[in-house]
Length: 158
Image (cartoon, rainbow, N blue to C red; front, side):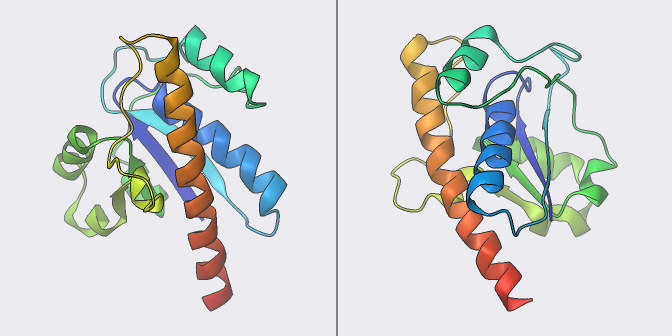
């Protein structure tokens, strides 16, 4: 299963989701074979590492974002990935505009996998305070747990 996380600049939310899924899957669902990546819909930070505040918050919880570098979603990604998860509705709209019609069924919001939560979108912490990065981690961890449950169920049914 190939999963791509997408936010605006690929320096806060989507690299966090990439690292959280990699770490949780290795620890909690080693039976799943996953390929995980992240990208942005805008080219603001191409080649840059994740935001230092994002890296610090993630490191406090045991997630390593150091090797990650920002990139923009490419047209080939719509063919390559089985599931493309946007962090918010605006980025989901951009993905739907850029994706071929056949890929639309693979485009979803990440927080669809955290149904017990009250939010539908992972807010962008970039312009907020340090608590925003912790809140993003809380949301992403909850959604990734739900995503892993979904992927396990899907693997059992296959």
